Length: 255
Length: 246
Image (cartoon, rainbow over all chains, first blue to last red; front, top):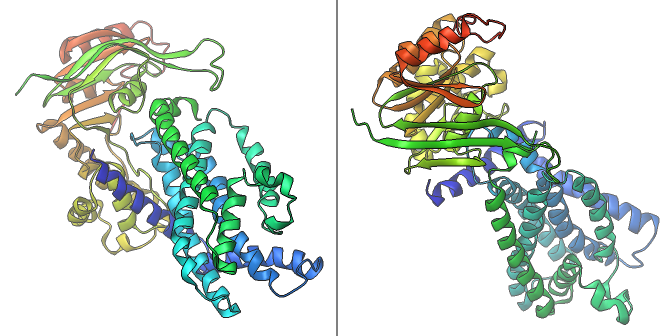
């Protein structure tokens, strides 16, 4: 089958999944907006209203810049991790390249994130953070984060059938990472001695870069962003090879 | 009719690991040593009792499972199982489901769109094609699933005991459609435990027993041998005459 066919399949499967998901609730597509708003509201209530962590009004934009992109990362990984397992009936009926299943999840979540990102930008502009020249860096950052999400999701989806216990580790690992990625605090608060370790976390590097662009109007640290991009591309290639190697093993080990 | 082989199996064995990660313990062999070929334009019957490895064999032919032993040579043909309701999502309407199912089975969107009229007509769905499949009766769902599968024209069709779905009228119609497909010049591999079905529809047959090839050749000889072997020891519930079909 030609490669173009799989692209068509990816697009239509994603469209069908999104539509089916929306049809399951009364508010359907409105949930694309409501759900992330509720998610962010939780953190706003806890950190701004309860802990008075903000100190000033600017804590909310600061928080949202980190949370929206974090949710894109976190949601895709959690959903994508077990996607071979949930599609096992399908892969026993017809041969499909297995990388298609996590790709569908990634595209699905990216479409939802696109809506949230637009809302965030609108909110920031209303708040007074107007676009500057450095907004040119924003598409690059989004692309690098997409690569990172692809690398992580592919690897988790590829390994989960062999290691079902991975799900429990990753669920907690993501919670830990949420607190280590500088969503609730600025990277400036990290002692200089630990900073290089702190930025080994790719999401910490990216969130810091997003804030540079969206809030501070300065160019991000391209070296850090470049490393994330490089590592992600290597990761994606590795996962692609892994999927090809174990392609026809998956239907045998999943039940 | 041309007689060149388009798929060849040579000593094929398929095993399933008992444990995914460490591969501890002996693997389970679903097929041990199977050899035969599929020739262009023919209808090949695969006969065998329950648990003989027939379904595993189809999955090997379709490229879903990889044999651990032996060789499988496919000379570049698209081989697919006739799968009913493949990938159906109950919340979507009949149109979207037909599209999804068709694309999953290898058609392009344009091809499915062009065939949608025929699909709706064959499935006798009328305006229901625009309703969510969740609101369909089981019979309607089966009809749509069958109509889509019938339109997804691979080079080699693999059929696993599905010779009629839905209510009495549609069963007859779908069975006739399958028979039409089988009798056409299409290459078909038909799996059944029923010797009569195989004898009626196929030209050649292969008999799989205890995970190995027991016989291969003209359908009369193979079906005859299969019947003889089953007659005395009928402990096996899946004996050839035990379960009438269609």
